[in-house]
Length: 264
Length: 320
Image (cartoon, rainbow over all chains, first blue to last red):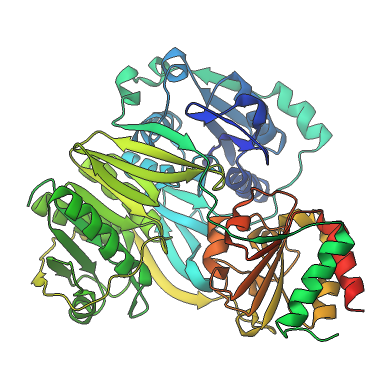
């Protein structure tokens, strides 16, 4: 069995930051493996460890810098990785959901996995749509926001729980091959061990361009474009308690007494 | 129909329409007005007649009922919405940015070969171009996304628009979708409530709620001591439950409990949108956070911009 896990290097903004044009200035950004993808990697590696003959392959769309996060996935037990990038992608301002789905679909067609795991969303652009769009593009079945998985590989069925709103979970059976978008909390992602990190350096990390995937530049053409980025206007009219920790704690204590919600 | 028209898809679960259905009416009406078009609704599955009656609010021009199944199944929804959109040819298909919305909307966009923009918090049409407002970087920035296409699929963030009210006079029509059963490869086998347990945080008058800022599992005890000192109940944001530091029944948010206490004290919680959805109805919101720009600060009535490891012990001291 083969499991393909899509991973993304995401940028996180520091508490204080400045916007430069259509993005946050580079010096205020830190890069990391997308949180949801970390759980997706763990889920795949866990299945591989529990069963025989399971290969886990990661794919990312991203520049050379992204290799750091892909190596992180390799260090956690992914067998090999593919990074999709070339000049066309480097020159593209924004990859929309359709473009990402088409690029990843080409990888799915080349790799022919039984299962694809993606994170529910990426915490930078928060589109949350690539996994389901990918599934439909390649004709796989899918389930979004999966927080428990019981895989019956022989029966060709994934028994999943989908985390709905308000503490309700939906139990669903999904036919394989399938794309599952993985929710945080489904497992406990491991830390990469030193041994894992050393081994990751020796694992295959294949860089492929659009042409290698049988795609041309038209795949990134998109009617969707980012035209403005700004800090939202503060709507809050919070009373900010000032002073030392003792001062502010004292003011908050007074407030709670005034509200009559505490005694003492 | 024309490109000026809007088709919005209602959402229901376990026999009841979800609030987002009525919010979609408001969002859809606003957009249709800007474009000079009509607002059509679709309701798929369950007691569609009763749902249609409830959805018939001011501003809705037509409601299309599709009696296919009882509960949400994305394989059915995708086929129905694709067929309805092909039939009506609206310029915009609006769907909820809910868990189920995200389980079918991207596939609808693929089938219709139209772009999709998710999690809209604002919509406007300028010179024929749709402008969608959305957030990035954990709500730290807002962005405008332009969609230069005749037809587009958009998912709308729940609780962002007010719910439509007032009785409507929509034309209710049954739509006969042709479902290819061989393409239905997923089966919903049941539902389970998972927020049970010894404590019901939605009953508490005062909630002391802890988030990622607490850093380590062993530090939870500090906030627990504060809750004890205040006679309050301990709750948390999602990362704390994901890490297994508190049980699921303590989780406040979209996927946890919706709470409305007299006082909600958010400690080391940045205020992700999913969390805010669960606590913004609290009477008084207090935030303790080192980041003055954290989204929770926009919601707070009172705030302490300081290290929680300084403030919480001082606060415990006050009540001991």
